[in-house]
Length: 253
Length: 358
Ligand SMILES: Nc1ncnc2c1ncn2[C@@H]1O[C@H](COP(=O)(O)OP(=O)(O)OP(=O)(O)O)[C@@H](O)[C@H]1O
Ligand SMILES: [Mg+2]
Image 1: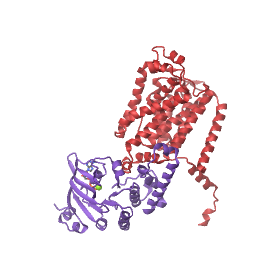
Image 2: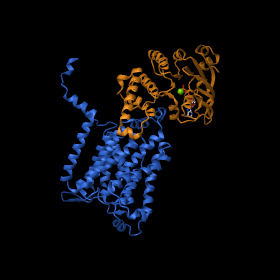
Image 3: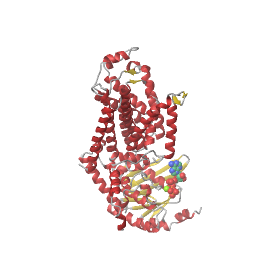
Image 4: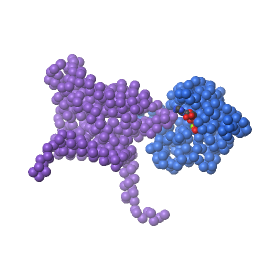
């Protein structure tokens, strides 16, 4: 069973076709890349998968369930979490709060018990605090837990976004340019980190990335988009030697 | 019991003590202002929940207050008093003879306002935020029009006079315990709400809706929750205000009333509970203090004729100055918390020679 499958998804914005009949399939525990030149439609694909946009045509299946057009928060609940290309942290809130918020959906307490702080609620709150701190430890941000999230340097903000996404207990994690703004050393660490969380949290990972070193280093298979159309898919090796891909990247018409 | 709970209890007891002293020493005019302060604390906090913590821009507070004020007035007034008020057109029979005790009527005022919150919030909160300001503003004006025209229920433009005193013993001296009692309960309620998981979800929506939704937060459900809770407390605040004034009419619930509360919230810091409390007290007192500006003024042998409304002009000017220099209000989104106070205290009492060690 494929964990994620898209069936000819198309996204049109007025006259512009951002993504056209895109087909893909990801198996459980794979690490898959999505690459392509600027404006190729990569982020738009992510937005369709996470319910930010409803595809103009086509269907999306998550664990064989049709999720086309579902609301974003429902999709998160089913087990797809994401990060954003233009980091979207809760800026004014602390690092720890950012992660705690991601636990709200699965907390299972009602408004009333959160106000009167029932013993059950207190227990759950304690548990999500421990879980969030442990996630922060995993991404090396535990010491900064009380800092305002917008005060972190760029690379750390990216890591916080991943910790926050992990806190929703996803099955599929999708990362939009996780290495953007990272230095080579940080990108290397990121690659290890991605493999590590895949194993530890039993995840499937789908990522967009421009740093070829990262994509080729960590992904098992890669899809290539150009002008909204899939021009290739295959192993890093196959992609590196694919004529169409080279053309697209070199800008040869 | 944790240290913080203890501190909270101690300060509540201290508040009660202070209120007791004030209640027995202040004159009736000052007491009225003190009551008004308590009511504005409730109103500011309820608006701050919606506008400050969830980041919605609602302008409907006067409407919810009107619903609360009329509900509580009609439910507490004795039948004879109602008959005297409704001399143009008699009151509908199902309202003529109801007379409930004050606490129940006050609660009903909140419930009906909250009900209106559901009715207006459910369709509008699904839309983009810009629509909310317009829709809520429209709602509060519509409430006024309705109340002006449903003569057999609200007595129309004539309004209702002779509302009973706040409280159950029909004594003026009881009011303070209700206004500030409810205010303290509201403060505690909001603090508990905001510091829980739902409060964090509210703040997440304010910070970034797209990210909040991607974290699995149902935007509509949470916005509606906050909106309805805010409406509930607005209804309670409106009811207390009505009873304090003793007279209510539709004109009292104009947009200006909402505007005042928005100002208090902005001034105190959008998204700060302590800010709203401090600001509500300061603004209420300042509004009264500036009242002298509306009257005649004597400088030497000169008498400057007072122009009514001067105090609003001066007040708005003061406000602009504050907003220009403290853009985020008195408190920003910060709070006076026990943690914060304890930390400060520790810093002050720590021996200074500590620095030399390292
Ligand atoms: N909401 C929208 N409305 C209109 N056009 C859009 C919208 N979102 C994306 N587009 C357009 O769709 C195309 C694909 O954009 P997308 O963001 O998916 O590209 P991308 O592959 O992620 O590029 P980059 O590498 O620069 O992030 C672009 O031409 C973009 O301008
Ligand atoms: Mg993109």
